[in-house]
Image (cartoon, rainbow over all chains, first blue to last red; front, side):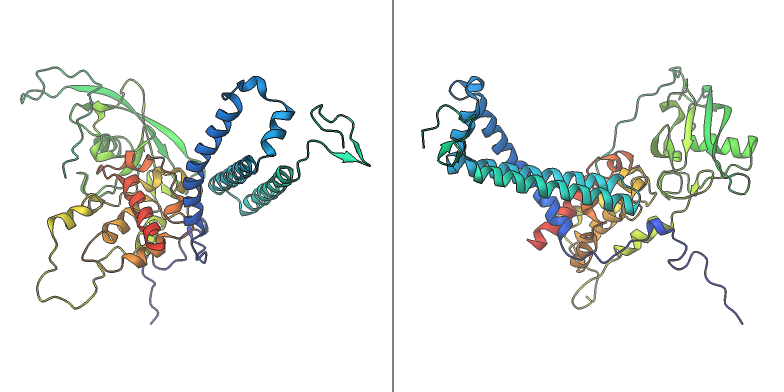
Length: 157
Length: 260
């Protein structure tokens, strides 16, 4: 005698889009969530500190020029400050856009393509920015001569 | 227990004499119902019904009137009709409500009242959706007591404070109003959803239960609590007034403090 399967039994009648593709063990999502909160708090301090020093202190906005930035980056404190701001802002932003892509991209292929693009852009900008902060030289010297267009405050080599 | 919400202001002018055992005032409404019958057409459409209803009537009474007197093919779920069974959650004027707890006089009757099936779950017919994905998530959080240690010879005692810790989340009636109001669930059906997290919360914070760690591990999934964007749609939709977003935040915190 054949038995009739109980109505609505088994996983098979749940549409594919609802079936959880399990396997992602680990705490990545938790750490990403925590990073968003912590980096957000730190960024508030870094960004408002940055704005205050650049726009309010001394002559304020009128003092900003190439020399001002060069002066700041001669100090390891501001190098570190700007480096932290760059990394945190970019990872914070990337993680935010990653969640938006996860929320709104419906096709797996679209999601994968958008995220690849996002990560590539982040890697390029973060590496480029880090190099700029640490290799910045306001008075480049070429063949024993100051290069053309160097600012006037540069000493003769 | 003391979260009784204030009665919404009536949008229909009811004479002051009403409620004195006299005649109940009546008014005309247009009920605009989302119809879908896959045996006839793959396309859903709107049907309008003009009905004369009374000041004491709910949206469910209007649906009954349509089904019993106008169009018997209208399909919807309801069992107790008194806000306990959780069968008749639907989108009324764009908000997830129980049809049996929404009085017509509290809605804007100058415009058609729209009634749609809840979003995010496959529609089977008219206002009936397939609840199976919803219940599957519910089952996965193990919504039953898993005690540890020896079985006591008498009942498992609990202090009033320990009982109050999870009181809010015991009120869930599994109507799916919260999960189907969640924009994350609309695009990602794999998300556990607010209802499953609420029912996990009910046992995670129960002092008599010993499987909290297992439930936290389940909800630490990439489709678990971290998918919540705290839009508060679920708290707004819950017909039992459960502070769902807060419950989800408490589960997040429990996972964090367990892992760090």
